[in-house]
Image (tube, chains in turn purple, blue):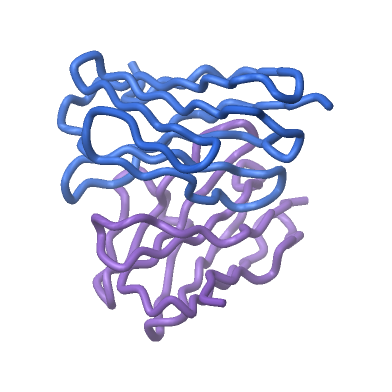
Length: 112
Length: 110
């Protein structure tokens, strides 16, 4: 089945220790998104790629970076995680920007 | 004022009840409206996608959009315990980013 896969599902990192979250998709979609979702809150868009074109949201902290080496994979790098970065990180894809977004299961990040 | 307002609940109903979930919005440019279901510790799953005023039905689910009132609803008929989840409304304008509501936590009791 075509799908969006996120690894790991659970990640524990120490305060200030860089961490990378991974997303892959078998849908061959052009657009890949990263969202941050804190408990009982709406998902918040961090950035998205349209093909290799990176689009950062204005309020996304510099601490968050992303890479998309090919169509199938996208990575979220948190350079120096703080306690406030503990959240669920969701990857989503869509064929085009105006199309429906399909979400992965998320990676729950804990910062100790 | 948030662009999208959604009552966070929690909402608890008995099995078989009709559930009504609602969102209001302030941006009249929104054209596309979605409802996602999110089970605990999982990613959101797309339930309904509409782009015009009126009703759209899919099984036990009906999505309703009233653009004149800037109000959207999701109705669940014959609710089941497996419907227990958080329901997120989401919307956007042409070419814009998706704006989510806070989500309504629903519990259907057997």
